[in-house]
Image 1 (tube, rainbow over the protein chains, first blue to last red):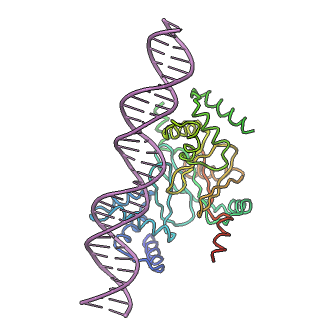
Image 2 (cartoon, helix red, strand yellow):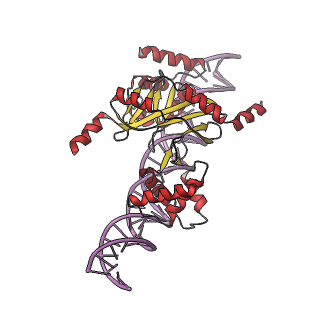
Image 3 (cartoon, rainbow over the protein chains, first blue to last red):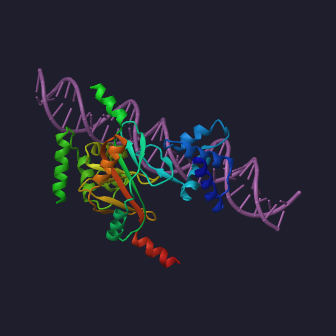
Length: 147
Length: 147
DNA sequence: TTCTTACATTGTAATCGTTATAAACAGTGT
DNA sequence: ACACTGTTTATAACGATTACAATGTAAGAA
């Protein structure tokens, strides 16, 4: 199934005239198989073994290419580095304020909010971003024990 | 009315044992009267005249103090610098992808999403963040003319 | 009041994520 | 083979934010 995703992504890229290099292939593959939401540096370090000469700039460049192609979303989480998320179905993120863990969950799109916002402000709406913050089960039980 | 907000904010700070310095007073006052969503540097430059010796670090330090006290929210918008928003009523932001303008709009809280997310993931939910992205009227008419 | 202590501010250096740049390197079409 | 265009690499630069050490300042105890 993720093979299909990869193929679709590569096709989508090719159709927009972007060349498929081994590095791009590897980055996409890594992102699709990754269950976490990696930073640029995560990706860089994960592929270091396979591409000893690859530059961090290549990772950033290609993440930007993917983002422009709509294959990847960038999540700016607080002060630290951005995390990147391969776009699959519509889903949102819930983020643990203690350990930074990010978990996906599904929810029907918030079209109504978009419409209202567009109506009130006169903006042409493109998309939205929703994140929920809290504490994950692991950190909850950790602090419970500590007391 | 914004005088009341300022007084409330100062009281809230004092009650948590935070000292009210002239700089803190000025930063809070600026944020409450500001209709935009200023960056740390905006605040710094605005108060330069009144506090010629104030350091940028002071602005950052105090914004962090305010954030921890729940008086101020930090908006990490893309790659550039964070913007800070004095917390008033529940409102959300719509952001122009062209010029970066941020406009407030009201919408009833998304409690339902929070509940579902909490139920599905087992997180204890604290708060959420929602932003809508698009193009503002000004930029829309600008690009319309350019064609 | 004066001393002491804890918190605040200041100025500057350092950090870290990200981007710019220039050179070397493919692929593709002629 | 040649020119062209897009890609990677390596490194320098940038810019926002933070850490740190020194100085300043307010409040409470003696």
